[in-house]
Image (cartoon, rainbow, N blue to C red; front, top):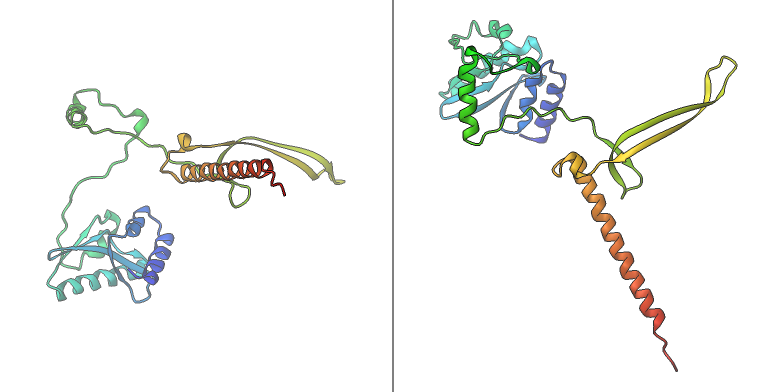
Length: 237
């Protein structure tokens, strides 16, 4: 994908109302664009089978045109078109294509706080869970990451921090008692790679800061030693 196509895809994805459009950014798909370049189909080819990931993304009035364009492109290359993961509310776009509808799998929303594996109705799930654990598999619900706050104090001092304290003291007011001068105090705690993980952005920034400190300390130590040596040598005439 060229840089221009990538920019076009990112713009369409940013305007899409559903999160599955972000699958276009994985870098493993080919794209078919509409004439306006405001819509696309993402797909991959395996043998003679051309498989899209979902229906067209972008303008709704261009969806059917893109579907037929994809179908005709497959025909020209003797390929078999497959539209995978089409939501029920968009099936009407495919009624006139001559394709067969095949239901594969299910989607469900699980209430994790109340979910359990107890009872006869969950026996099959318990069996699968035990087999997976015997093979070394681990199930873990990873909480979403909070936005990363950075404290920037010069080019060489960029550190991940957590806000621990915020204080505002109003010191002066106008005649309507609106504050016109206030003093703000912040309390910050520097986060390290133990808090964020070494592979995270924040952990990498912390390690870069530590390395820079160690380099500066080493340079300072060498400078002090050199100064001491030069001061201790007396060259007589």
